[in-house]
Length: 256
Image: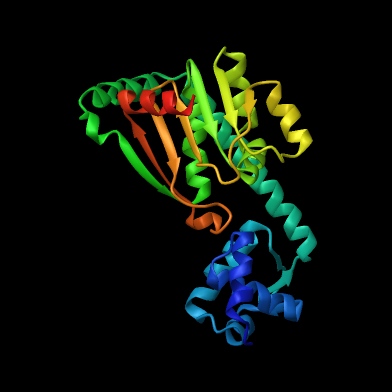
């Protein structure tokens, strides 16, 4: 049975590897079958078929029928989706519990001490970094906002402010509640709902039609986007981050 590669790749969302995907598709097409038959029509080696089928059974994709020869029955795909969803949720809850315990553990204190000591040894010229991909950039922006103590200054575009409404508003709101002063500069044609929500936590000002995109935190660190968000895919969006108090304070004065 020939299955298109792009179709197999889509099955990665189910958490299946290549052999598992091929055998599951083969079984779905037959309803019920033996390992040998499935191996022949899926081009999965017989030496691997039983192990792979056992893995699919453990994951809840198939049922092993009683009798000889051993046959396998396909579980309906909608039921598989529910089983995968349940498993993912359980694993996420378990991992969240482990991480919550780590937050209060001596191990985290020791790791934090190591990091603090290591940071003290870093040359000031090394406190910089480059990011490619909007998701990575926003992760670092989130960290900067989370650790802000006094001020946050953001200059952005219309689309940029709307993205920050979706991704960073909660972090900015918490910063505001901590007493951090937030200033945001963006074009005047912003969605009213977005403006209303940001106006409750920040001072808003207008800027040019094609503003620079950057974020200043505590007159200490700065993240600058190097690309135009109108003309680039989010995976190619780029930015640099630098921790340089003298330089950042100067940029902040220019911005003011």
